[in-house]
Image (cartoon, rainbow, N blue to C red; front, top):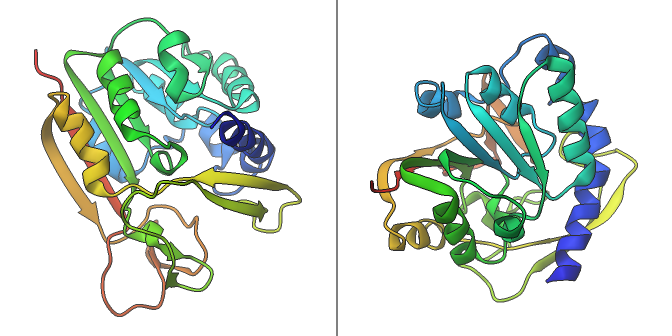
Length: 266
């Protein structure tokens, strides 16, 4: 597993420089005040975060973390990529915010961070990089205050069954025993970018995602599914409305994203 995480860390280090200069992340408008959170996240969190301590898991280079800081949260962002964390800290200083950033694999976070948080948050393209969602749930529970809120917005596991290039179902819905290995080039912001890497990832059903949290006593407050993605980040996507993208040529509607809000009992 150490080899898998190290390969993924290198891949995300390579992606940072491409992403920070991309149209998708639009760093220029972000630095001028644009909130990088999607409508899905804002509806769930905009009235929750002001004055609250918030832990952002798998924060990449910190745009969403810093958006939450602008909304009044006292934020701590976590990511395994040292280049991502370095850029996040630079942006935080340039913007004059007081966010904190920790370089850590989420699975090792209990040895790299102390404290409890009012909100634990993570979003979009996060769970597939984790082999063990039982462990992930235990980490969320560990850092969440009694009465605190956990929120995730994530690509739906049904969508992850498809090989995006050929629109065929090629991956299991339910968790497999072994990592899926892919050697890739480019990235979702620029498929022609001159980077190459090896990724290791895992599939997880909704049950495998939600049940470990329920078993730790977290209570479901809201669960939603969406027939679109707020990001044009996969191959063969079409913009159906401004900022809403549909995958594939299917006549039927398939789930693209889910969101989940849970509360830890007092």
